[in-house]
Amino acid sequence: MLRIGLLGCGRIGQVHARSIRALEGATVAAVADAMPAAAEALAADTGAEVRDVATILQADDIDAVVIGTPTDSHFDQIMGAAKAGKAIFCEKPVDMSVDNIRACMDAVGEAGVPFLTGFNRRFDPNFARLRARIRAGDIGAVELAAITSRDPAPPPVSYIARSGGLFRDMMIHDFDMARFLMGEEFIRLHAVGSALVDPAIGEAGDVDTAAVILTTASGRICQISNSRRAAYGYDQRIEVHGQKGMLRAENQLETTVEIATETGFARDPAQHFFLERYGAAYLAEMRAFVEAVTSGTAPDPGIEDGLRAQILADAATLSRETGRPIDLPGA
Image (tube, rainbow, N blue to C red; front, side, top):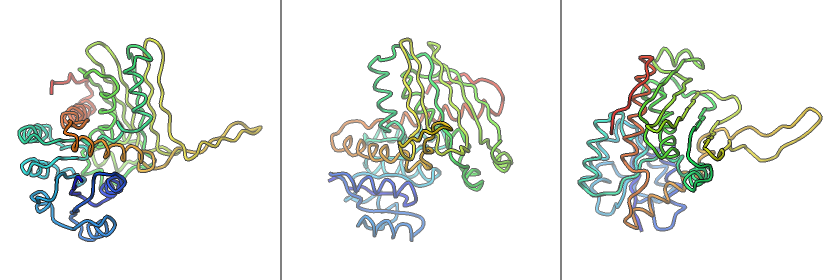
């Protein structure tokens, strides 16, 4: 039985706790949170003990940690877990600093502990199947990919101010998905962005509407568009075009019911929230982590995937600020 210490009992911590409870071979043994009430509530729900982070990291009865705390706490927790020899699951982003991520990579490598970066969208059944068909050669060599990600509504400006910006907070998922699908690293990036949804987001120094074009050394192109607003629900679509055809993953709707009348065809809106849209992905992600740790195989995506996505997010931020394309450095 893999005994897991859960760091962070907020929304994402609760999601991971539910996933762990649904799996055989793993249990939430202890939880920690800066808000005692949140820790107590999740402990009561899971049967875990409430401890502080330091105690969990040092405990002999904890085999692995799941880090779902604010990003600015990840570095210390990763370093502590690696030093203690514990397997690590860390939510994205690993850290806002590329240098800090590299330091974490060194610590994780030296300790020889498993590490999974929480890019849950790789585990979505639709996106995973799309990628598998690319790898099987169903559309031949990939030439062009388009990734669309739009939230139903923007988060509070108080969140925006500490998020690191749209490219590091929101589009980082799409940067990882672009790498996941293309199978080739990007060498050049050009980003544009505007504050069209909420002027307060612009006043906070961020954008809420953005697009990025990425190219690989072989000339393959990926375009990503993000918006903090979609009146019709949580918009998550992927299209990949290749020499022999095209693969597409559409939005997940509230139901599959469609009505046809003299006025036309009508369907339900897209699912409204990421917890609904990616429920299956979160469970599959945690299952992959538990199975990797217990079998002694390397989790995927690993910490280097977190680094490469962060490099792309930093480059997109710089490109938007300067108005110039960015040649991407090696990782």
